[in-house]
Image (tube, rainbow, N blue to C red; front, side, top):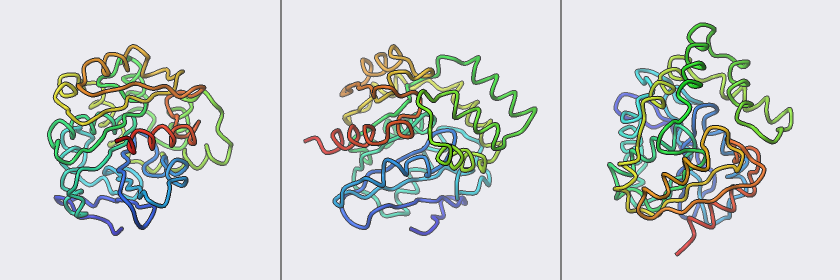
Length: 259
């Protein structure tokens, strides 16, 4: 799919598959659409994967984007219209993308069929840790080493060296100002009340050893949302779609295919 022109921003909407109903994937803070490759490459023929890249990530230029979650949700809304994706669609979102998805689902409910939040709660518990990362990036910049520190601190399972390197390289291309802007937005985010208004079925999916989104965080969001269930992926941390892609894919497809 060509680059979308959305309110003065160029937005990349990568596509895998040529037919079947679509599932939309939103990345978190790190690699852009590349983070979903291991999950989407095993999709059945009757499903297409759409992978949107927020400005400053992957192929989407940063331009005026500064990481604001409300702004990201607005851009997502216009991007779906630009892509002529007007029917309700299942959305799978990780980390920062999960906060955008919650905001989006509360504001534009007619666009959301089902919602899967991977490694994402409705708020950030460890604010101090994110501020530390924010200040380090401000002082030292954002490069492949910084991206590797960010990725590996959330991993439980070791990735193959080549796979980890490719993810770090993809993450390192992210605009540094966008990274720090997203961190500030995550620190100030709280979407528990928004979750209460969402009527679409929701799956709160986390690695059982996620150091950032705890079991309690997932339980709080699940209890607050109207139609939410919770599931864990064994032996995975904050990046279950990298650490256990087959299990992650199965959980996603079981949920989005449910009647």
